[in-house]
Image 1: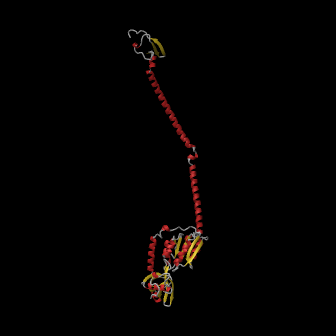
Image 2: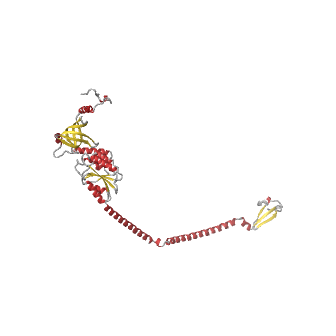
Image 3: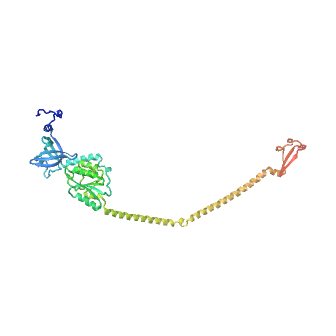
Length: 416
């Protein structure tokens, strides 16, 4: 029933005419009461029983959201199979109606029916999440970061109490005593596991001196390991820039954290062996490597010594001039042959030249002059071949074999 003098609707309120809180809460309660029943799923947190009523918080670990729930104790007990125990971390599906507590001003759920989320459904949910994350490439091998060979500081996320911390720290220091640890002890099961483990990973990742992070837990049931398949925690591990090692459970356990981690160790002890080298083993390996190097060098030197001795024993190195002498004999023989051939050629050509000289001499005009003939020429050098060419008294040159004569042309001789 509306109080007189107050605005009927929220949009009618003003600074001068506000709603009292009691009036607002009644309005909200009336609105929530009109909401239908619904099915909701979440993880049980802060489970308490008062008389015949259970009070609990239903939490969504993926986004860290929660809501208060009340449920009849008999109704909830019927949902728990015989042999199982309802405790924090149990996942429930509830049929509930929203309710608003007017005095406290808080929203909650009044559950009428409850069902435990079975193992098969949990496995199906994990498989669906696995498919989504794989499609995003969070499990791809190329995303894996290599672990440092010798980390100075190792970040360790482990339970507040348990053997995982002892197994990792003790075995790592046995292998490499100088290694240091930054340990973050957190809750590793139940509803607080996801936010605490995720925060610890982020904190260690932000420390530049931490070179590798190990998330370790010493095994447990499938339900105990569910936080390590939670989407929020898996994405926090994927966002870690420091190499991360997952050492959750045993060999047969396979939470999604194993798939997104840079390295999966089967146990916390195995993780210790993976993140630091064994100093004794490294010394043995170094000694063996030195021995192999010495042997390789000695073998190489001996091989080269044998090769050098073989080269030195070859005739060309024993008496290097032998090759030169052999070539010198060949050159001398060729030179002799060349001289002989050239001499024969000169002789033949000299004989041929003599023959040509004789032929030339035989055909030469000088040879004709030697036989007593003469050549008569006029003053201009013209050869006289006909007496009619000259006039009486004309001076002529007469060429004989051994010189020239000057003559004066007389009268022509009759009969010629």
